[in-house]
Image (cartoon, rainbow, N blue to C red; front, side):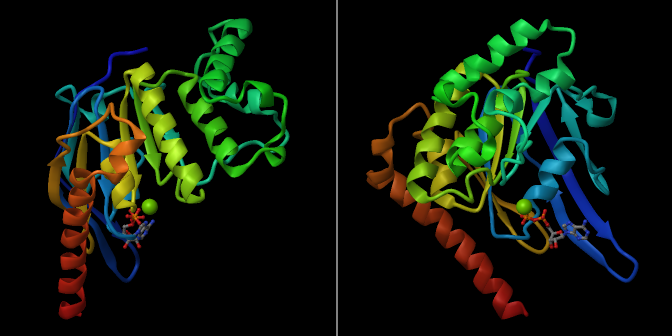
Length: 266
Ligand code: ADP
Ligand code: MG
């Protein structure tokens, strides 16, 4: 795997300009993402989380401010093959098996590697996500959680140093979702990559992360950066502990406060 970069943003501002109006999606967002860290971005719908991921992956150019990868501006950084992206829906090719879907990214990004090695790599991830016996199944023959695990395999198979996940578990039921969170932490300990995880679930952010970035809406700003004192590795039992529920409660109050202020203002 390529070196995992240190990512830094300085006063990022992003405005979507439309004919009649301008939407200020991000304002003065400065965040620090050390190599191999697990960072969550949490905030209400519309606060600019997806926009921030798009800026960090070079899809959108900031209106003001800058993004640095190891001190070098994002415009001067070759990001090809560096970022794995996982969306809320698994977006699998319906005519391809689980293995065929898991192979897709290496087919595109790692063509130089012989097919048998790419298959071995895809199978390794399918095994790590307990999908070995389902590798010949088509997406419609898999549960929602299994489909999202295939999409994880697809992203991890080309070994991206950075994994960006945009509300990846939002469509799953709670039990599956918690199991996926635990699985993701296990995978992260194997990959040694940076994970930037977007969610509007506070408990999900606190459970997964070493650092939680709390955002408020309109315009999207960083409200608080929390270094989680009991970050991973940890077990499922953390969820019931007072230190966990206290931190979740703290963030909830913050976000509620922001919401109340918004309602008063409008
Ligand atoms: P989140 O992912 O936190 O729900 P988004 O980043 O998708 O938030 O959106 C932030 C704000 O920018 C919202 O007010 C949204 O309506 C607006 N927005 C997002 N994409 C566009 C776009 N392409 N054009 C105009 N406004 C947009
Ligand atoms: Mg979004």
